[in-house]
Image (cartoon, rainbow over all chains, first blue to last red; front, side):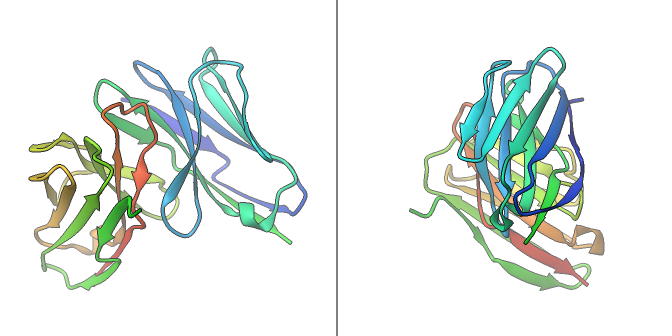
Amino acid sequence: EDKVVQSPLSLVVHEGDTVTLNCSYEVTNFRSLLWYKQEKKAPTFLFMLTSSGIEKKSGRLSSILDKKELFSILNITATQTGDSAIYLCAVPNTNAGKSTFGDGTTLTVKP
Amino acid sequence: NAGVTQTPKFRVLKTGQSMTLLCAQDMNHEYMYWYRQDPGMGLRLIHYSVGEGTTAKGEVPDGYNVSRLKKQNFLLGLESAAPSQTSVYFCASSTQNSNQPQHFGDGTRLSIL
């Protein structure tokens, strides 16, 4: 059975801090890992990672994949209160047509 | 540009009542999904569909049924609601390549008393 584990489950930081969120996985037929951000409502897509060692970057957010050790990290530098959200990691099972989601990391950024 | 639309947004039911949640997408996506989200538990897949007329069970299918009679719509039914089904329900869709990001609706908050 596919498994995706995120850590920590929750995190409280102050504005300006840098955070690292972790996602480890055990899946068959791995092809990609996706990160989503969920604020009040629907999760929205952040990054898709398919290759080890290649960093994806968008502003203050970046993510990287290690296919040998089966994990990914999501970094957020100079955090702002608007970064407060649940961050979800997901790994598709392309043979089955579905994805397995981790339990998410709830990030709270205090002013 | 609607994307994925869920109806209703909120609902309160009594134990034993039935209801149907509607999900509609206008992106011509093949794949559609129903998830539930409980505090601290991420998204758990209830049922999903890889095409019109086909459905499959996810990890928590008990107590739910689904139908995909039209490509753009995916219905989630609760035949006899139970308090354990109190949750936020999300619908999502994606292209035929499940390697691609899913697009989510804004969720339905359902309370069963």
